[in-house]
Image (tube, rainbow, N blue to C red; front, side):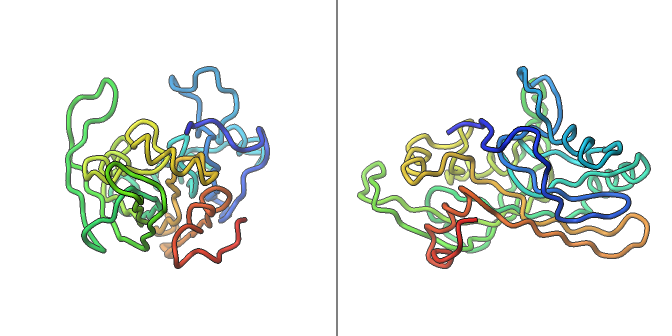
Length: 245
């Protein structure tokens, strides 16, 4: 699997919540959020698309990894960006992700509390906590190590902190590697999903919940999965009849 784009370049991004001060868009997998040292010659970025699409400056409140899809919160002015950024850093923005991992976690609800460094060039470890819920389980007729079948779990991940690749690295720490993760995952299980036509990393930001920075109104935005993520969901009993949008 790779982080290569599976989206049409320079197309408009789906806006799932529009407010005069900010928007939430559904970022497709494979699209980088902004230009950086990791861009490696890329010229297509979510921030640039939105700037052209909305006809105004945009200010990122947070980032999603290139391979991650889902809710991306973007402010439309500097003051709003500052207020939302402070709320994010203070832990006042709730977020949840859907993901698929190898194996069946022993508990339906569990927490991984394991310090993480800040990524390349940032060796200092800081507290990192992710809460998980097991939503569904499946078993595929594909060999795995010494077993004739392979087991997988559909999880909801709710990070309490926001460290570098936190959910992916926490799942690796628990030996429940995220499917499609080429950096911290398990290649054998990634290949099993490629055989099902699923070539992306299975991490999707499904929900953001926060207070409006001016009115105080509770804002909750939910972003549906689509495409190859829905193919993965269809492997699980409770999602087997969902449409492959």
